[in-house]
Image (cartoon, rainbow, N blue to C red):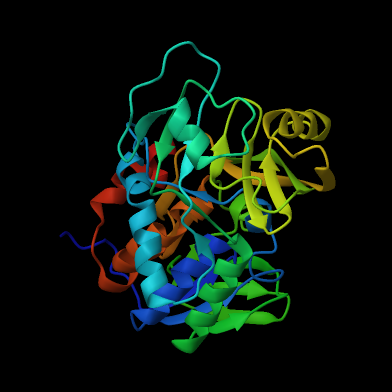
Length: 340
């Protein structure tokens, strides 16, 4: 492996206690770095809380981060072994649409017929003629995982400053990163990792090509066991989150409610409990932005869509770069310099 240039430091300030920042803080602290994690709010309280939180490595065929995405489920299994009890449900996922012919199965996927679909989701009124079954997929309690990562970081010695907005990046006379300024005073660190989603660079004088992307999320009351897998159709992404609760990612609450009631037997009593509008950090080209900022030595970015899916992998790989000083090829297509 090559060594990052300039040389990295084992003194890190991670800005953002969403799931990505929490993962970086946990992995870096576990690797022996001196870690300070700082956030304007509480762990996972931002866009992390508004994620549908589907974790899947299946069907990833192209794109700079395809290899990274393909490791997602394996990385969560690793994380579960390190932090027993993290809230992950390995239910598998079923996806279908109204096109006449089934697509080719991607990695980790198989094409299943209506009889198999009916076995996997017995409450469906009309099982589709085909569906894409990804048995290795799952979903997480995104806030619960984030809280567990922060607790794990603390266990390994990280200092955690919550409800502490960052107001500026500190630089020394040579222009290198020296830490951050906060509303409670300065925090020192030779490397600063910006992992605060759409808020990553706004107040810090760093241009990051990330735009807010609205994502409606609906919570529904539903009969226990109505949905058994992660179900993805043209109408909604849907999964069970508790005995009598569903969560749906879709466009319209009224249309989603009608679609759920018409798709499943016994769904007539399903009702809308709440609507949230998450604001996902969407890089300009849709791919993660992970790596050092060349013009500001010591500054490192970790911003992405599918943050929940990629958090376990990204935390480990970023730590190898910043603490071990190695360049991870899995991140080669994600570098910030592709925009400059």
